Length: 453
Image 1: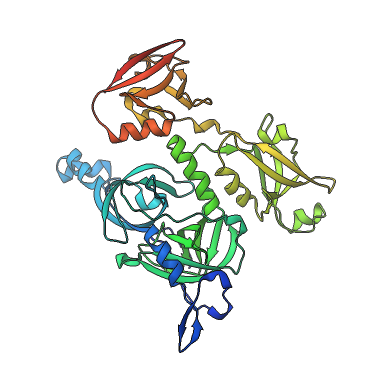
Image 2 (image 1 turned 45 degrees about the horizontal axis):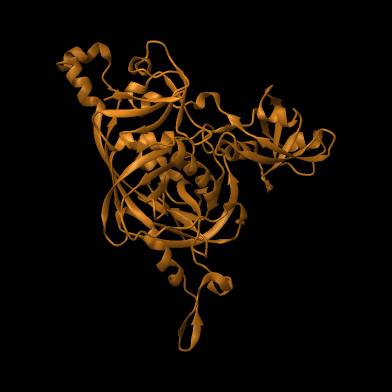
């Protein structure tokens, strides 16, 4: 039986490579007996310092397996329940430095999930404790940050430009053995359906997956990041040459939101539908059985305001072909609210039309202020459009936020004399510091300070 496994691993690409067929730009020159021999070493020497080993420790909470009615027979019910629910764990994964100046590292959300401590080991042997900037379980992306000098970053490629058959190289740390490099090709694009609740638009590779490699880099022959390795499909978690990576463009969209907000604020198109199949293609006289058939358009949604109608078929997103409705959902779901997306649509009359759609904010995407600080619970926060700080959109009556004096219309502009421009910056500051905080508030034409601890 085939099994999908999301491991604390990065994907390794295995298999031989016909180096004679590699493109000239692959940086291949060295000679043996005066003959030019191909090598990826010059490129890898520049890139591999940008891939790191991630070690995590934490406590996993499990439900007690002892039925409530029988806990009395095992001594103190509360004591037994607590003992059975907490289990310490250690894990290994990989990550990719994408911004050397800021120390930003991308990895998989499942690598650092429930971690109490995150340790980064660089290729040169330095070990540094990382802080979590944010994570998004639905796309399986997390962003970490370290403070260190002389970091090497891996530049992002445009993943929309990769093709099936392109050579790819994976870098990670299988089984904690240390950094390992393997190679293969891009096997397929736009894979989805592995988890219907997630946002998926996977790159498929002929990858050998081994424990310890999730979050590692999938790069092209120019040494640029095309994907973050994340999962395998195989019996009992073993390798059968089918592995998946999250495209770099999706990673870039998620990371930008995590930096700005500390979380992902998804853009919403406002349609329901299904993948085009043979029957739909025949009924609509479509040339291809690919794309997303729109069954319903929500009134007042971004799609409705743009002029998209039920019965239309979405065939391209930002000029790139899409095969399934799930792939459309994956692309749209990682583009932030307020962003514009170009959709190519086949209308009911068979004509093709392109729409520029500005995505709306997901109603359930409001920031949980309590997750930033307990005394902000009850306040709805939103980044100011003019960059002044954080707007207080509403304050629930009787809430902790109301108790400290926050009011609707206030703007948080700083904390402890540190300028704050976004929710992400506020979250990061409060995560890194403890004690009493003086929050600088702009209220109308006056300024004031509110104290929280």
